[in-house]
Image 1 (spheres, one colour):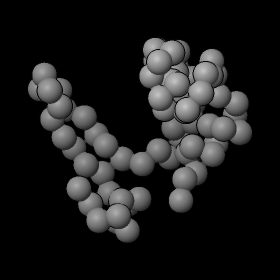
Image 2: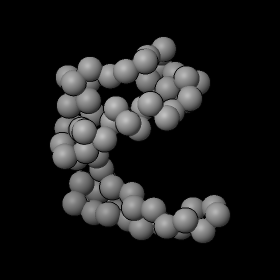
Image 3: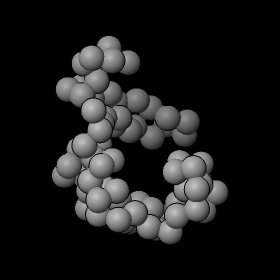
Image 4: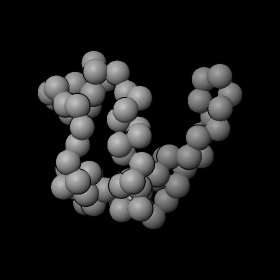
Length: 70
C-alpha cells in the first residue's frame, strides 16, 4: 500500500477472492456521476454501515464532498 502521503497520487491493483483484478484509488471529482448507480445496487444494511444512518440517496453536495476528500 502506498504511504499515506502518496495515496492521492497512487493507484493499487489487487486480486480479490475469486481472482477478479480490481483498481484501488481515491475517489475523484470525475467519479461523481458513478455514485447514483453504485448506491442503487447497495443493500440498505451496507448503506447504514457506510453512512452511519438510513439513506436512500445522496445529494449532489454530499457526493461532491465524497469526491473532494483531503
